[in-house]
Image (spheres, rainbow, N blue to C red):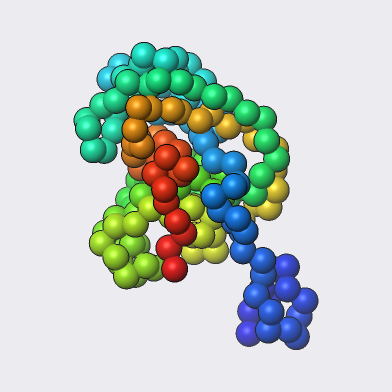
Length: 170
């Protein structure tokens, strides 16, 4: 039997969940992450209120506000290709509570649904996504008039889990 990281050998206990209180954990996009806008892919830190961000549902939405926080939070490393042929294109580090929209095979296999929004931390240990534990990050929260799914580095990410009213999938 393969040892489980964080669990003493010889025990059957499971490791602590990576996002223990998902709705209260920090989420957002780390500095340097490129977000699709009507002007092309731009680093999140360059976005300002009024910019038009490409969204899944509406095509684009006007950015209303942009909050920046320095936090210490659980994070995951996502290797290139983790969500398909090329998504993301490079290694990314995201807060474990950041909601990602899964579609197609991964949503069906892991959650039994054609599409689902889940904290990316729930996907750790799938081979391409690794739990980094607690790290210090600068996170950018993009605020829109309503909840949006945006495109960043090839991923479909929730603009804010609180706005979307998302819950972890069972």
